[in-house]
Image 1: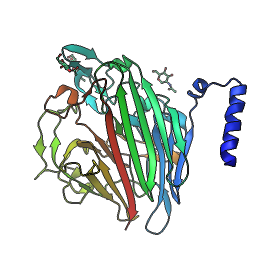
Image 2: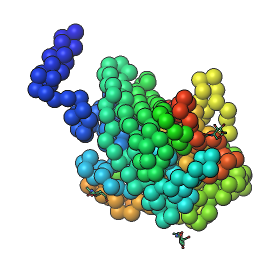
Image 3: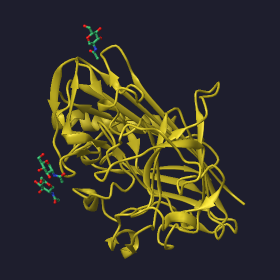
Length: 358
Ligand SMILES: *[C@@H]1O[C@H](CO)[C@@H](O)[C@H](O)[C@H]1NC(C)=O
Ligand SMILES: *[C@@H]1O[C@H](CO)[C@@H](O)[C@H](O)[C@H]1NC(C)=O
Ligand SMILES: *[C@@H]1O[C@H](CO)[C@@H](O)[C@H](O)[C@H]1NC(C)=O
């Protein structure tokens, strides 16, 4: 009660000083969600996850996501550490697509292709803090208005992302996007790099990974899907049973960077199991669920002496990403799940990360 009164007084003071809500839009802050010794820090710069701290099997706390010390280091970076990517995550071939005969040209930022929404995607903009609630199950909601023509995408789009600690060591990410006036492709993704041994503990090659998917969408040399859906059976991509990342990575040029077609239909809660990651040394386990049809499995192949938190230099395979999403370049592949949302429809993407120790 006293605290609410204090808050009211604070806002009154701001109002008296002539500080508008609009002015606070440009402020970049760091916000912590905390439940017991589980801590998640996020920033409204790119709706980015900057740290996730939890105990190992002996109770020792470590930060298990890669990132930078200063928010300024996230500006113009191309690792996408912790980022919320959009309007369309992953690659769009030749930076173009068409909707009902209208061709849209995008900003190419990956050779001739568009990657993660273009040069200035949703990870490179300041979001507004819409709602912030502390307490037993703390959460924060970020909001971003993407304008008609931004990076070439059609129509105004209102985007909301909520990070919430749902329970002990459980983090959910709820993404929602509402097209206001034109049909547009939407495919958001959370791009955190996980290292369950701690962000500065070396490679994830010894992590054991299980991905609940019997098929992948193979890609060409520019990492654009060929359109086929191929079985993983008998290939180095088969993670249907738990296997270490190292077990067959030498047979995958560059390392894993591929979309898996998730097997399970969504359950009564509307989610399907995606993957289980385990680190024997720390005993930490990460389980992931989503309502999305696919997951991009990426093993930090492009990391090369990237100066990160605590002055640590991240090297190749020092983190792994499990980015739930629609299939890459779905906007140019009619046989892939539909990616166009029209006014009146709402894009909804849900992720649940559940951490535990063995
Ligand atoms: C980021 O890139 C933009 C556009 O290229 C440039 O104007 C800006 O100065 C860059 N900012 C930093 C901090 O590098
Ligand atoms: C494309 O055009 C058809 C026929 O006019 C219409 O029914 C459909 O909704 C349009 N699709 C989109 C994505 O606007
Ligand atoms: C981009 O497209 C041009 C024209 O089609 C082609 O000559 C060039 O090789 C392409 N670049 C890449 C990196 O694929």
